[in-house]
Image (cartoon, rainbow, N blue to C red):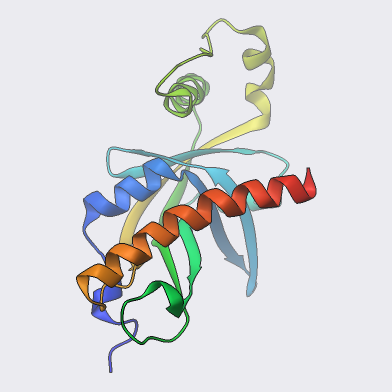
Length: 196
């Protein structure tokens, strides 16, 4: 049996890009001397590449250049699925959306490109209301450019993992979708009420 099952794989790039745009906080993984370095950063999808910025003092920064290998993960919604929501007899499971990308990363050594990229990322993240605009002549922005490294990732391997009860009856698929929506809304509120 092939694993993961084909019905849980979604390699439609439009679906993968939608996950990246909706959940841009990525987990980026580099390996040096068999030791993984992991950082969480928002990445923007642009011209079939991923673009990001990292603090120059982050130890992973040194690996985000020279066409080094990199793995990037994006996490969509996820939740436990109780058999009680199905109309048929099932076992407990977990539904989730994840994107795994592999590619080559390179540093972009250009202050103007860095500044423009930071402005573009802010504009993207502020959408759709754009309550804040990062202006090019912002003195704080200019003062911090020397502490930020711009990089881009050329994606070589795309993998979408969409485990959403696709192997069930249509009514059970619909119930699993509703459970994913309900659980995510409730769990976020419960979590924030507990820790904050």
